Structure formats: C-alpha cells, structure tokens
Image (cartoon, rainbow, N blue to C red; front, top):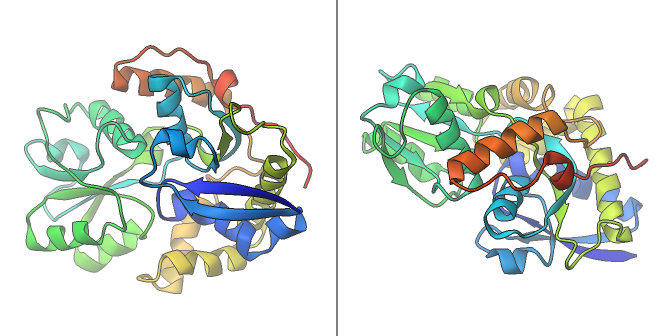
Amino acid sequence: MYTIDLAYVGRGLHEELVAYIADQEDFYADEGVHVALRDGCSWDVERLRRCATIGLGRALLSRLTDGTPWAALHVNTHHPLFWFLARPGLTSLADLAGRRLAVHAPHTAPGCFARIVLHQAGLDPDRDVHTVVRYPGDYGMDLRHLHNGSIDAAYVGSTMAPEAVAAEHGWQVLAWVGDHFRIPTVGVAVDPTYISPDDPAVQAVVRAHQRALQVIHNDPDTTVRHMRTFLGGQTEDEVRAHYERFIAPYFTTDGQADLAVGDSAIAAVAAELGVPATVTAAEVYCTVTTTP
C-alpha cells in the first residue's frame, strides 16, 4: 500500500468534505493508499510543500508571491464557501462602509477573496471598512462578538450553515463569496519539487476524491450524514438545505478545473496582491480525468 501526507489548511466543509468522505467511505483504502490527514493550517509554505495539500487557494497565492511551483491535480469547486454575516440593520455589502468587519488577513486566500468581493461592491477594505483581522477557526468567537455588538459583521467559513445561523439570531447574510467570485479552489495539489504529480500515491488520492465527488452528487443522504459531523449546531433539515443550496449544485463531478474561470481568478488575485500574473490557469491546474 502506498502512503502519503495530505494537509488541509482550513477548517469546515469547504476544505475537508471531499477528503472526509473519501476517508469515511474507505475510498483511500480501496485505491491502495494510506493517507495521513494533517492539520497544516499554521504551517509555513516550506513545510506544506512536502505534502499533498487540499488548499488550492493558498497554493495559488504561494505560486504568485514566492514562485512555489504548485500543480493542482483535482478541483472540488469553483465557488468558495465563505459568507458575510451581519447584525440587523445591514442588508448589503455597501452597508459595511464605516462598520466593523471581522475578517481573515489580506495575505491569506480567504482574506484575499473577501477583499476582491468588497472591491466589487465599491468598498476599499483599507479605508471604508474597519477590519478586525482574526485567525480563522470555527468562527464561534465571531458569533459571540456579533451578539454583543463589538463587531457589525463577520466573514465566516463553512464550519456553520450561515443562513440557518442568521435565521436563528435575526441576522443577515449579506453575500456568499461564490456568487461574486469564482476560482478553482480546494482539491489536491503537490509541489513537483518534492512529490511528482504522477506518483502512484497521488493518483490514488485523486481517484478516491473523484469517488467522493460522485457520492456528493449521487447519494444526498450519505453526504448529509457526513456533513452533520461538521455542522453539529444545525438540524438535519438545515444541513440538507445547506447541501442543496451550496454543495450539490457547485461541487464538480469530475475534479476538472474550468480554465477560463482559472485565468480570470489568477488575474483578480494577482491584482489584489499587487504582483504580476506570471502563470496561466493551464500551468497551475493540471487536472486530468482518472478513472476510479
């Protein structure tokens, strides 16, 4: 049996769902690979590049800023699962002007995506919004701060079903990032300096993830059951609604990247970071169909 380390660099359904299903349904074992799932959230790039990684957004930022030659071999979705969640009285992103927003740091992939969406809404994140930069986690502290009014809005990820949380507390979902910015994000990437894309262990992981994507599309009950592991604060009906709204329509069926979306996203990310767009989508997203 082959072995490989696979690192996730964020928490929640966005980052972990496909790998979690592949693990829980024994697809890795079926494909002849032992996968050690590693928490790489706080790892620097030098440590991360010695593993396969799920975080394609972080890999792209690394490739643009420091030249690490990440190759993305499998893409789970082009619609990032991040939301702007706000207290009552705010109904649109434009209403964030002059308000306090808890958000990821600008140099992180989620933070970069947030800034791109804010710019699209006509806001300068550095001047028009009072940003409260915090380390990404389960966003529980953000909910406490929304409750006590110390922030007006929070940029949250997929450790919760934001629409259910908003309905429970009388809050407002101002925007879903996936409605405003698309990028091939989360999947499987390697740095060929250390791990060949043709490595049998890597290819086995890709096949297992393709099988997991088929579960997401063909077996809603199993998918919802696995999602409830991540969304313990929501009811089964709320989890199913989250699946039907944000997961089933937008996760890929075959792990392939849309290169037109990729080129547009690379240009937007490079512009946000203030660096040249030195690569094309075809150079970054080397996705190929591998028969399970």
